[in-house]
Image (cartoon, rainbow, N blue to C red; front, side):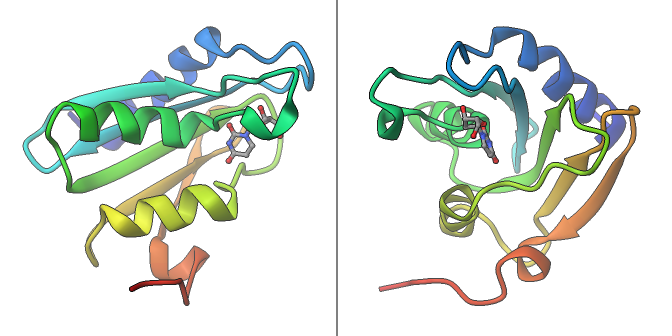
Amino acid sequence: MDYLELYKMAKEAKNMSYSPYSNFRVGAAVIMENGKVYTGANIENSSYGATVCAERSAIFRAVLDGNHKIKALAVAADTEDEIFPCGICLQVVGEFCDNETKILCGRGNGDYVVYSLEDLLPKRFSL
Ligand code: THU
C-alpha cells in the first residue's frame, strides 16, 4: 500500500470519530512493518481527559494485534492547515517507531506533508 492510500484510509476513518464535545473529527491509519493496516478515530468523553486521540486508537489496535513497529502513520482532519499529532500521541509513536517511521500530516484540501518523529518530537522521555 502506498502512502496516498494510507492517507485516504485515515480520511475515511474520520467518519468513525465520536466527537460530540469538540466537533473536531480526526482519523488515523497506521501501516506496520509487516504491512498490516489499522485505523483509528478520536473518541471523546464527557470527562474530557478520558478522550483518546485518533492516532493512539489506531496504534493501540495494532499493538493489541501483536504489531509493534510502525512504518507510517497518517492523520487526517477537516482543517485547511496540516494537522499534527499531539505530544502524547508523539510520545506513543516514539515507543513503536524506528528512524525510518514516517508521519503523514494531512491538510484538508486532500494532500499531506511527511515528517519523521525526530522532526516533530526531537527529545522525548524514555526509561
Ligand atoms: N485529537 C486527535 O484525535 N488527535 C490529535 O493529534 C489532536 C487532537 C482530538 C482529541 C479531541 O477529540 C479533539 O481532537 C480536539 O482536541
